[in-house]
Length: 204
Image (cartoon, rainbow, N blue to C red):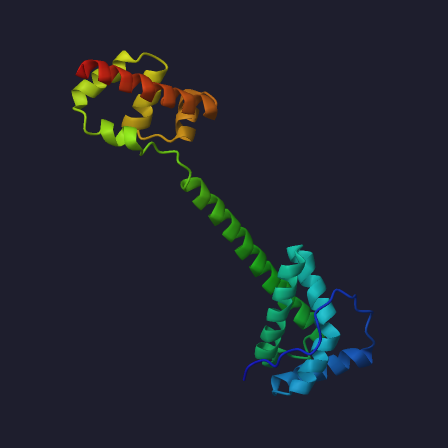
């Protein structure tokens, strides 16, 4: 049986300290929910939705995510209500623990997703020199190319060697040569220009 749609909006209103009678009523409602009582579940939702939202918001620090996770918590409450044992705790604490666990899981998933997107974006950066110049240079006879690279002088010679023959990215080149990233990029760019000029002279 699927969970019935809650009848009240999730909100962040704090819940006052409950009396023993209220706690017992919530326990009964959660037990009834386990038996498929939709009315009991709706009453449970009305009382505990502020608590669930508050727990989710505290963990996630994001209202939209907290609202989304809070709804998931009540679906889980409906599906797992049979696991509740009133002899071992009260319904409010039981549902709050579900909320905390689900919010932590969502936070981990969200952080992992952001980190994955950052890694993908980094990998997509044009740090490898696979362009018209490099493709053209691949067709040049290796010995002749090496001689041309030697002729362009330092620091461009090292930059081009590490970039093309060593396969280093801009960042790796900067780290290996101990220069700023911008400097590494400039050296490779200028080295390519000098190399093309040198090869052009040989062809004339």
